[in-house]
Image (cartoon, rainbow, N blue to C red; front, side, top):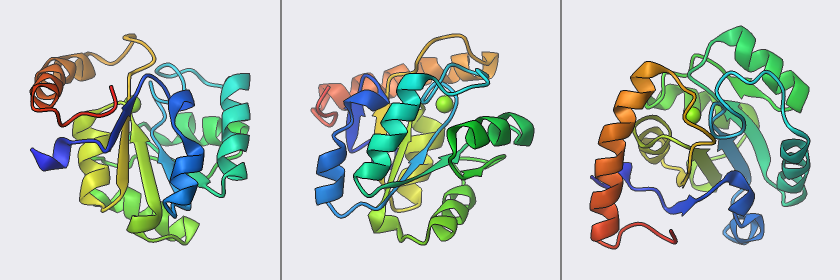
Length: 169
Ligand SMILES: [Mg+2]
């Protein structure tokens, strides 16, 4: 179950300690889009998100969106946010993460992956050799297939929590 274990777990992206990541030598932060940065299919970044992205860059971290969602949704959002992107990423496959790291010019050990789903973001990020951070999904307004996966995901999280493998939450 190691591939499903995030290194950190937070209520939202806003709780991530960016200064800690900088001190750890991280130089890039790969971000899931739906339910990590905004609600599912919300077309525009929020003002709070834009402020956060500025803080990310201020800590020497290059942001990049890696999403399984399709081209127009991701490209429109990413251009509004001023962030490079990889769409149709097929997470948890490694290739979308690899393409993002190549675009950013960073190695896996310098890369953080942030997302709200264990079976795509965290499993994929761990496979890609990155430092992984799970966040609580912004809301439950999401794709029916995702809702089924959540049931299994809760079981895995409970298992990790019981074994003391989930920190700091
Ligand atoms: Mg997501």
